[in-house]
Each structure stands twice: as structure tokens, then as C-alpha cells.
Length: 83
Image 1: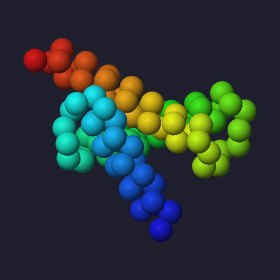
Image 2: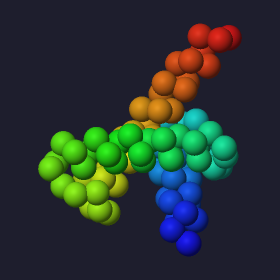
Image 3: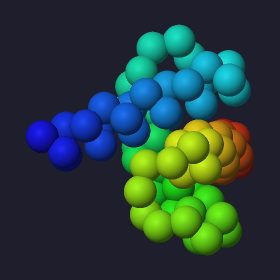
Image 4: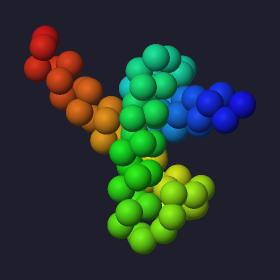
């Protein structure tokens, strides 16, 4: 059950990041990947910087969103260089 919650949260965070960046209105595989990677990286960094344990806290949730935005920006940059 926890794994499904993590996947759902990753999809939500990635989708919100896509909406903020104007990259689409529907969740897709890109939003899932960006949300999961962004949650891991951003949430971990936010927890470490705020000296909190690895629990669900506002700093980790905000860090997850910021991490997903950064992942999507990097993804966009790499895609634009390929074209």
C-alpha cells in the first residue's frame, strides 16, 4: 500500500510541476518520473538542510515539488539540445 501511495504522490507532484511550467495538462510518464525523482532528491535535500528526520513534513513536500520542477527543467533543456 505504501508503494502505491508513493507512486500516486510522485504523479501528483510531477503533474503540478508540469502545470507550473506549462508543459501539459494531463499526467503522463514524464510527470511520474519527474515527480518520483524530484521527490527523492528534493525531499531528501530539504530534510537534510532543515535538520529534520525523514518523515512527512512541509519542508519535504515543498522540496519534492521544487525537485520535480528542477528535473522537468533539465529534461526540457536536454530535449531542446537534441532537436
